[in-house]
Image (cartoon, rainbow, N blue to C red; front, side, top):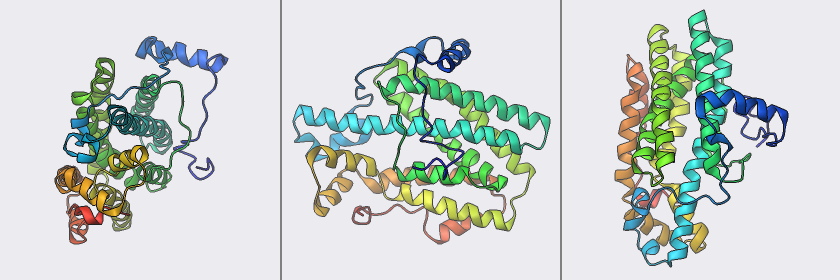
Length: 307
């Protein structure tokens, strides 16, 4: 992913080595927030969530796999969740810095300065759980969309999509990750994110209430959310991909069967209704109505989840 294309998210922004003076300065600055945990690096990343969290306990091809294959699939699924959180928080640092520049009052600028520190702290806390590597490339469709969103110039679109919808979604997502995680330290980390995420979300709601969304901004929001909601409509793609990575290429009938066993329509339907509930900062309901009219809150059946 080109740094010139995504100058705010900068997923490919490199890290300095641990011996670099800048790294030591950052560690000292973070110490009061995260202690020394950011220095702990694990050589092997375990599977932090069990098979039932991903619905794999209902999938026959997983149950029929060897113990080693099952662990590899769980590792792939867990790693995808951790990398997503890492890239989301990395993009969040850039996004909050951008919003510092777009602030219209001193208090708003101060808030976004504090929010940038939240995101930097979260990023530092996640890194040790990724083992001895720092991801700098992603081809994940959601993350690529996120990178495109944070480059937008329309502040109303940025606040509504990022803080009202995605940070609201993130609150629920991190809560579920914490509740079902098998690792005590990682559970505590995700629970520790919740207060900050709630502040980010509520600030977005407040700003949207104060500044009515123009028709032009509404159109951009609908277009952006259409793309995002479609990624939810198509079900747990990463779980199916993880199975394919370990078991080899899956045929179309095999993929359909897996989506059926994962109960993809219920899985997606629950998430789509949560996202719909987050659109309460759309007082005219024009955004909701438009998305509903094109079926964006309707989950896809298994046969439509195959690409």
